[in-house]
Amino acid sequence: MSEYEIVERVKDWYRTASIKAYYNFLLNDITIISKKSYKRSYEHDPYISKQVIGYVDNGRTGFVFTLEFPTLTIDWSIIPYAYLYKKGYVIRGHSSFGPAPLPNLKYIIYCITSGTGITSSTGYEFQDRLVIELVDLDVAANNLNLPKIIYSVLGSKLLSENNMIEYGEFYEINKQMRSQKLFAGHTWNDAQDIAYRYFDKNERDLSKEVFKISEAYERVFRPYRVVYDTKTWEQVLL
Figure 1 (tube, rainbow, N blue to C red):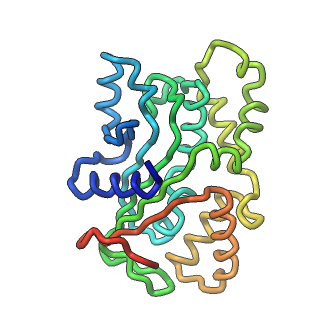
Figure 2 (cartoon, one colour; figure 1 turned 90 degrees about the horizontal axis):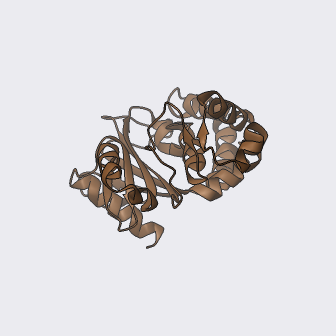
């Protein structure tokens, strides 16, 4: 199934209110189940962890910059979190991705709806919009240098059978990832701040910097992104 078909299926689940808030799992038969349903199913059949091919984060925002750069702004921990689970690890004390590794996890999918009447500094109206952005996990992880960072933090654990990671180790991996200046010479946090100031605080002098960040964003995450009108459920061409 193509990226387009997956995004269309996610949109249809969203339209019929079948998708639950926040955390959901996309299975290889292209059904979507909530985190609660996934954990319940895992108790009866652990094999379901091998059927997960996507992680679907569903949320709502009142910030325009979040709609423009979902992967950069929604949840900074999802990509390293997901990548660790794909590589065979479970993080102690955190259960967003369930109780077991997800060896076939391929996609991170963000579904973001806009608040009422929010408008960008460029005048684009984001009311009644659903942004769906699909990211290939391996592509994003490699471009974020996660394999190298994970090795520097975990060391010999990569060769052991103990796949439990302490939160402190996870935090250090995230810290190193976010400290890199991969977004036009800016760190993850600084790029977020610049995008917020331009789109939501109307600081138009930042337009050139936002353009460069946007180019870097495309290079790092290679997102497949579609915007829908939630009144007609047709694609919006920007």
